[in-house]
Length: 431
Image 1 (cartoon, one colour):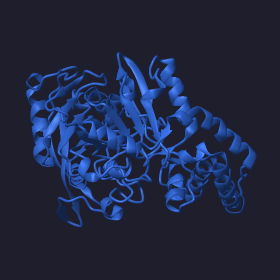
Image 2 (image 1 turned 90 degrees about the horizontal axis):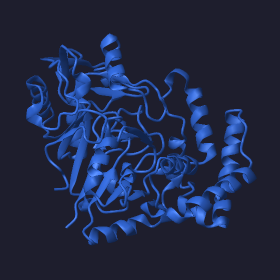
Image 3 (image 1 turned 60 degrees about the vertical axis):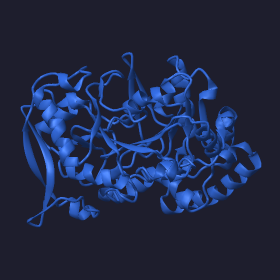
Image 4 (image 1 turned 180 degrees about the vertical axis):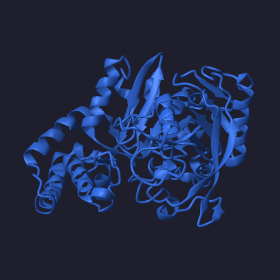
């Protein structure tokens, strides 16, 4: 009997999911990406070589694994083809049979990217901090029932008709509302028909494929993008992404029933980071934050933007555990804290002279919360490349145990470096 394991971010994204998915892909037959678009970047280091993946699941770096882009993803075909080309130039993804794309996944169109950028500019000081990749507008069209899907590329007449109708509206909006240049039907049509020739072979009914694979007892790994606190329903709205990043989307965004999912694993850094705008209680706007950023290489894999850095927030991770129904926690980048004398952990928030222990759903409340800290001694020894828990410095072990107590979660993997083998595996969810 195969197992179906979901991996999600337990913070604001960038928790190191790419590496953990890469490790767990060893034990999976199929790896599924179930939401988001190329606004996310998973960084994986294999034999000292860095790979940054935006759409294709990290499992593609393991030969013979089937990788699926699910119906919950929005796909920019130009980015996808660049990613395939980059992988092939580095000796990866030599077999075209290793990738499948859901026919129901929506396409990101050129007008989505333009609308994303101009709207953010119009918001001024109220900007959200979008990557400008067209993700939000593509999801808007999906919900508005005028989106164009990957399967539409397979029938020229259908694609042409949908594009024509959409351009009437989008060009009107761009020209009259934002005073921007519109798009020529001919140009967009031919560009996307060129893409269609190159990706048509990957497009299929992936929900049906997954159902058959589960009946054959295959191990399936579902990978999310971003993190729980960026979920459009459960995150720090409106400073969120445009999709559901929580574990429930693994079923919806893949076309399988929720009862088929066996375990949900959350990924969290040993500290906290956030990209873009929005409240962030434990943010360090000082030299300590700067030091964490430099030590951890905290720059966005997709945009290169510097990440905002702060101490571990147990309130936020406990919330993520509840929303996702987490069965275990993976702690990444423990080694980034190696040189610190003192380490802080946020155990609650002070709001209006009251200490609250539960994460508020209202961003206006959260931005006025002051973290309540517990201080622990740092270990000031290297943890890099340690592969056994009892070989860790005693104070590093004590830190891990305290995080388990505060988050009410078992930590099943501890990552202590960027490399594939730099991790302590305490429990394998597939075994």
